[in-house]
Image (cartoon, rainbow, N blue to C red; front, side, top):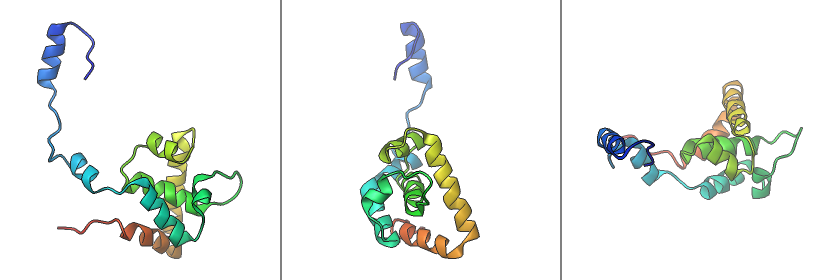
Length: 129
């Protein structure tokens, strides 16, 4: 950890700041979350598109599979918006946020679309204990 200030101040800050316990939910999620490639493979299978379609941006053309892939990678892989944007070659995390909002809205409006998204997500959902 980088702390600006005197050595005494740095020692005080490090004493006050607690490290996350390995039992913290964030650490537990890291152990069970899928990587990006299996999620993309599953989206490709369910939506019957090529991987290149998921990773390529096409302006003014609907690409629901790409939006769903962004949404699920963000959600299932527990990535931040900038990390997800980098995975898809997007320069702005706003594009990922927009894609996620589009998927959520379409899920509410179209039950068949929601079932397709749930079909991908079901493979990675954890059993409730």
